[in-house]
Amino acid sequence: MEKLAKPNLIIGVNCLMLFANCLCFKINLLLIFYRFYSFFCGFFTPIITAFFDEYGLHIENQEFDNLNLLYVAFTRAEDELHVISVNPKKGSLASHSEIIRFFLEKNKKWTNTNSTYYWGEKTTKKRIKPTKNQQQINFETKTISKEHQAVYSDDKIRFGKLFHDFMSQIVNESDYKKATLKMKARNDIGQELKEKILILSKKTIYNKDLKRSFSNKINVVCEKEIFSNKKSIIPDRIVFLNKKEVIIIDYKTGVKQKKDIQQIGLYKETLTEMGYSVLEAILVYLNPTNLTVELVHNK
Image (tube, rainbow, N blue to C red; front, side, top):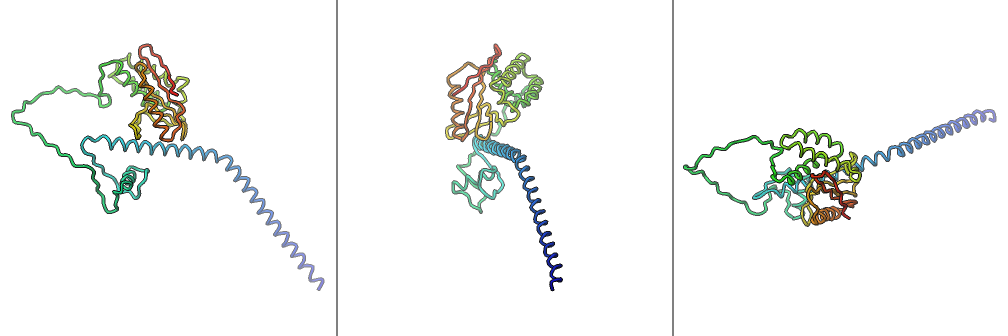
């Protein structure tokens, strides 16, 4: 009996050692996995976080633009406004159709069975038929570019309008070259006026106090209408440094006036009410006569 017990004991010890080796191997695998996981998180987490922050800001700005676009579309009709929309599954601020349903639900008008809603009364206009004795008038026709139809008699007003139009095309510094080529190709503007616009715009973009507001790494909104409880505003440039901090820039091509300070103050107040922290509100005065740029910071 003693001789038979020894092989069994050896087998048992061997099994125990094999189990221990397997356990150590699994522990080593877990340690390797943990180290790899820690390295992965430490290296990629900041990149992933930055990506989602940037993507979230993009979506937020997109929703903001969509809401402003809807407001503009709904406030331009003179007599009647007809809206055709898909049937949204829910009411929210995610899309135009869902905004409409959200509005109807808030005003307790929405029903799942109704697809047509009316407000106010229909307007009717009488058609005036031309009389038989109506004199035919011959008009001289000219082809006018659709893009540039406005003509301003006052040189200062014309410069101001054209400068604002030019700067609205420059979201970031990288847009300057394209906008410059487009300006040079226009045949409805004199060479002297073109040069003034290009010189002053370049001085503005590359001004040491404004340069970061034209960086290619930030989000910008140019001349977009924003509505509030008080009135709608159209700042020339809103720079989003991040989700909460913004800079407001407004261009002025005339003499300094008290209403300029009041106007940019309203811009600042409106954006503050919207939850943004306005770090700077800057008035940029441009003089086309002596080609100077002067900055006035509103505090």
